[in-house]
Length: 204
Length: 156
Image (cartoon, rainbow over all chains, first blue to last red; front, side, top):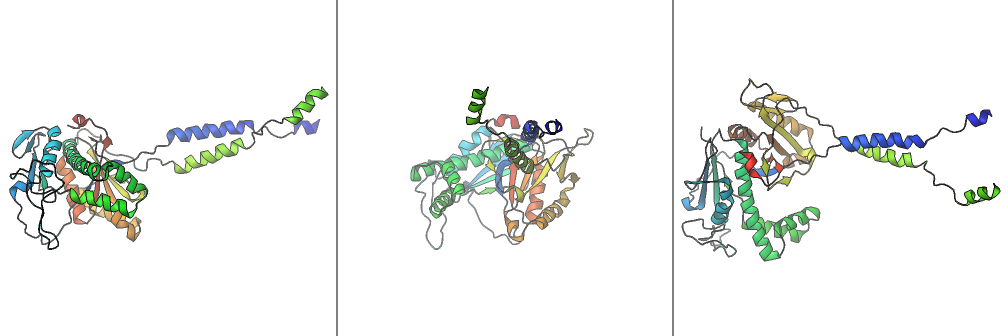
């Protein structure tokens, strides 16, 4: 009789306890992925070389403390920036800067209007974003987002034309298995439409 | 009776003894991978702006975060900057980044990213000041932390 009372402890409820704990941790676990707009700040150099840039190669975006926008001295909305920036970057009205001794050449992948009064070449097109100290951060991020969007769309168009794949697809693929050929493709797209964004001192 | 007993012998019940082990294994996995929020915000929780062209931040261990937002006390105006559980002055940002760098390996320093988590109502002036400080010490990779979405109207 005594042996019967000492029979092994029922371990069936062990699973329940463990499940309870498991569910608790499942619920409380937060795998919050931090995402955002990536930017590279320009390096600080002591003696910045004097470069003269033609007015037509700069897209002037000014935003004031009331979150009102001026692009090339015209009052616009945030949603217009993407189209304006794309038109400006993709214009291709002239030739690129001379590189490695080679003379500049016209942009053969641009689909822009080839307007001589707008930017010469994507590699020369500079977007200048002048903000006020009182501008709200949300507005600032929106503008940055639109500019980023313009570049991404242009790169995407070129990627579809040249490689028959979307830019995002290429980037994802490159991240997962970075082969040399993918790297050259991504680099080519980035070099074709390099992001040149200048942010002058804010208006006080 | 004897007939029933025979049948039972032929098909024993599946042992559930290993079930706790499996569950415990899962439990330990989640316990280990769970990260409790390591920073408690002393400023008001920043409402991040929305953006559509977002990139995920890779290498979480190489990211240092700067929070910008309003003070919890409504009487205090202006943007407050918080790093690691305390509110700091703009001038102290380089010190913070240096401290963060000291925790990483030498070769990883150049991959370090500073993530700015700022309230969408914060002033751009504050953000630009932070950027200037980061430029001074060559911490050039930054990320404006946003939530993913396509409705930019909520930003302003």
